[in-house]
Amino acid sequence: MADVTPKKIAELKAELKNALITGIILTKTTPNTFLVRDSPEFRGVMSFTLRDSKRHIINCKVWGTKEMVTEYNRKFKIYDIIDVITPSVVPTMVYDKSTLSDNARFQPLPTVPFALVLNEGQGRLDTNNYRDMNAFRELHNLRRVPHKPLCSALKLQDVCCGVKESSTKDQFVDLLVLVAAQRPVKEVRSKRNGEMLNCLELIVIDNSYRNGVILSIWQADWIQRAEQYWEGMGTALHLIEVKLAYSEFYKSTTLTFSGRTLAYENPIGSEVDALMKFASTLTTKPWDSLAYTMNNQVDAAEIKTQMTVKQLYARAEGELKDDKEQFTVVLYAMLTHFDFDGIGQVISRRCSKSCHTLLTRNQTECDAPKCQLELSLNHDGAQYECFFNINVQFSDHTGTLLEARLSGAVAERVLALTPQEYQTLSGQEKGQCKWKFLMDYFEVKMLVRKANAVRRQMSIIVVDMRAIQIPELAEKICVF
Image 1: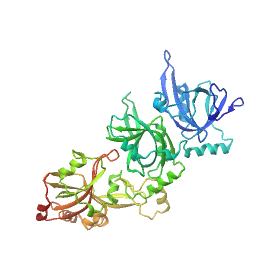
Image 2: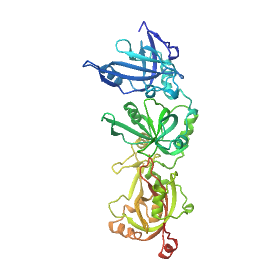
Image 3: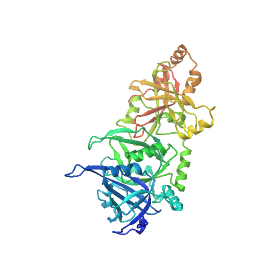
Image 4: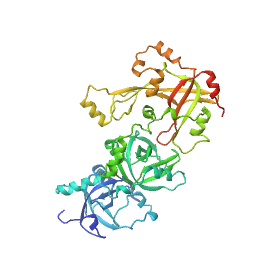
């Protein structure tokens, strides 16, 4: 270490020797191991992207034995501060987005025309000793200070409208988004080599597109970080060079965290403050079908468009489908399925704290860190609240509507019953209540929300319903 000279990324020159670069890891790749030709030895390679100032980032490629590369991967995590000791400083082309080489497409775009290269025995990575606490603090704070301005980020609404066809070429864009929700990590078999890979799907939103967009993450380090530190409705991400494409599987615009992508967590800026303020005003979660049933703000008096079941399906997923996310409808039909006294779901539960997350049947409390803290400080408070969430099916002369749900305050008003009162009823009393409604005709006003990437199934929410007699039905019935 006595022979090395500390250098900033901005000070690097081609063929510079004995340099010591200290920086924070912004991202890293999964090691790639391979068998050396004409040898039984396995070698490995991986890359780190480093930053040492508000302005500059650089890529560092490491070559060595499989064991060395694996050890570096285990030892160094995203946002660690490390020393790069005596690397080779290699000139690279000044990147032009329109003419990126294949190699450049799989790594973040540097701000200098150089790359660092470490070969085993000719340089090494080491944990920073933090002797200079001011320098350490400055580097540590760079986690929340993007090297590109927040104001340059695009809006989700704009990028979703711009990518609507599967033939559209992949694009890379900068976005400022809020993590709305996480899905469980799933295993996917690679088409290239059959290997099983982990994939984490996030739903992200901003104040221009609250319905949500899928963000897929395949990198193990970022999956681990997201699971540990990213909170639904509590983590903002400045995504730089995130991949934007049209997914044939989802039939929608999606985002992919690629090898070229960088992410800054909860960056500092007025734009993030505005995004968080927007999130705090959301009383519904459009990406969550069941949660949306609790707080839909549709005025029943404004719902006037009459349709048959056949027309409704044609508008939602058939030949009359348009680009709108949702629509309202008035249906005149018979209630033909109402499992009020059976084994079907009648009561659901949600967190009683501010997040109002829906709980599974086996859950008794919300597992969100913020809610866990509230519960630990107030053991006497209710941990969840119950609400009606009943599947109801309506039939007319054109077919049967299967997806409607009678939920929340609407259900309580229609049934003249609260969830707590329902839970005290005997089986006979539940059966009597059921037959007050089943096989009768109703005017049903509904909100229909079409299937999309974050909501794989169409959801239909009963906004209001009232019983009608045959003469009124005869006046209202229409033919498709």
